[in-house]
Image (cartoon, rainbow, N blue to C red; front, side, top):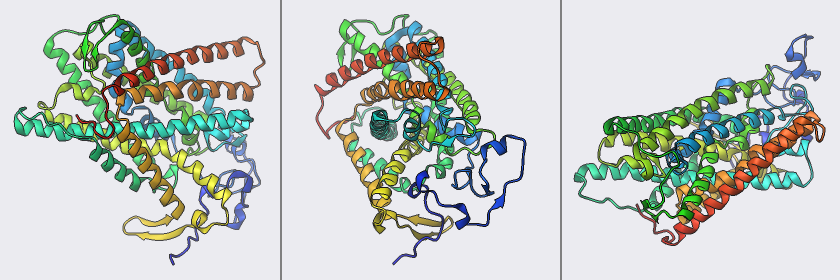
Length: 511
């Protein structure tokens, strides 16, 4: 039998209502009197240098780790579809919509960060997850609705990232194939093997027990984000410089343009424009894991202050990148802007630069997959530990010595459940390998409820904003407007899926 762990219980096994006195684990100190923010954040008499005010191990996250998590979550595969999105909307509406989405995300993320602690953003009780925040502020059926939407969205993101990673893996293989054959070999191949490869990698990384232990993966992924975004931007600039002109129009793709899905009709122009809204929404979507990121941040200063700075810096940086990548991608390709920017430059020259960019995408998606899925993993494991608290299969952890790393705590339930989750997302990705459509649906499905509605409603409740006041009306107008945008984007994305299904065969898609 493996030696049983004698370390502190995992976070997920002791929710706040079952908190143990920290004096069981170490000799506590009496908190000294202070007149600064530290006293406000740690008001309890049981104070320790090793534990926070809620009895959990000290959080160690900083502005930079929070920023890396956000950038990893935001600058994902969605950046690759922005040239296509601007191509549908045109030079006027495209960048304008992108900037509006940035402002909405910035504003609602700030509202949401103030709901991390219930009652007061500095001294209130912590909410460890997005659902905890909804439960504390809204309660009732809204909790179940939020959980269903949030975790379905995270599940969908995992599928989308598997598709995107396989596309980049194939791009590497095809670029080298083109180079060896001098462009004579069409280099067709199936995406299934690459999705399986990505799935195996994720099975391994999914065994990282907790969200706060993937900070290093987020930093690596954030660096990779800037790498492939910069390559895409550089190639777009080079192509524009080579042609000596900017392509595209003020109103977007022209009716009658021939694409891989056929000739663009007036109806398809409408659907594609609406789908572009979903693609841009997906590119900015990260609110669903904001609370989980904030729960890794140390204090003082108050967590919401750190998150506000991290959010402003991250969204400002990503918006500049998005505008540059999307605009130069559209300027380079015009109406023929591809759904994945990097695939539009061909596979022959400069093949080595495209290889670097696609390797960076794969590495980034490995990390982004974990950043998004860890909250879902933690929810299922917390719920299971509570339901089957006496099951050694679910709750017991065993020490496994790992050379050069230390001791890994093995939990059999975590091993089995997370492996099954990755297998399931991989199989579904193989069934529906539509990158643009999946991105659009995910963006449309998650934008309004998770990025706007719940943060607005929670903030109204926490700040005790009265009905029919000017501030209440302003927040409701914002929420309803974003609802219409989400519905429109969902309609366009579903229409895109219907078109793709006409020429699709399960498990036989090749590129």
